[in-house]
Image 1 (tube, one colour):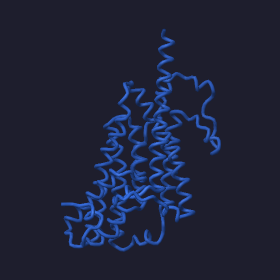
Image 2 (image 1 turned 180 degrees about the vertical axis):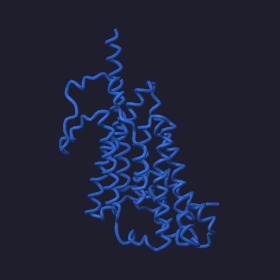
Image 3 (image 1 turned 45 degrees about the vertical axis):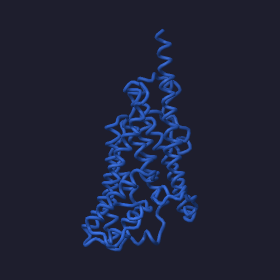
Image 4 (image 1 turned 180 degrees about the horizontal axis):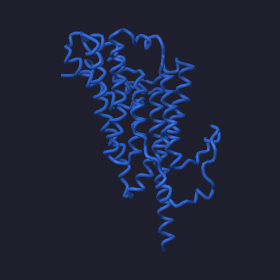
Length: 308
């Protein structure tokens, strides 16, 4: 019934119901494909929640903020007020804001986990603990971990939603203007957001489940998850801000891409956005997870050695 061609090039003959249904399906496609506005943030908060239910909550919370933004965006599209997206490239500025928020949240969490980050000094920060503090037993370190501020996932979702891509183009400039009034146009954004939410909840649960693969204690999983989350947000935020600054200064850089032959947005090319997803989730995120896991394992071995 629904082909990729119909979804990506909706015919004008679609009824209101069909437009809303297409919006929902497009949202699900958006949520399941590796998008730089969703995956890095969902990964960060989901892993930090260290449980499947927590991961689902992270995906839901992020998508709730995203849904509100998309409702506003499609309303603007109906009213003809979203033209600035056609005139200006705002991606770089959105990346910068998203990056700054990520960095702030990551720093907040790190102050309670492992604030021993060299770049703090470069940013004008102070030394948070002494050499003696570095010898504190893992159990005591785990007990100082700050909780993941899930409300920030909501803020992140709203901010990230202002990024613009292939899916946003379809719902804003093609589907929303065909609706009978602005309220129905807002529903296009809502249904798109709900579709994204469904998939982000699933992805959030999967990301969080990664933490339970190894046979570790709840405290160990909590430490690894929140430490990984903090570092992903912190360093990922820096990556977002730097790449955003580059795009803002040189907008044409986004046009450089390697086509994959796949018509689906986010899968149709390998570009700067793809690099950002791989860098934040693959390199920083999974790398931080491995580092934290190794730290927990070493601590456990030392504890066994002392006991003997």
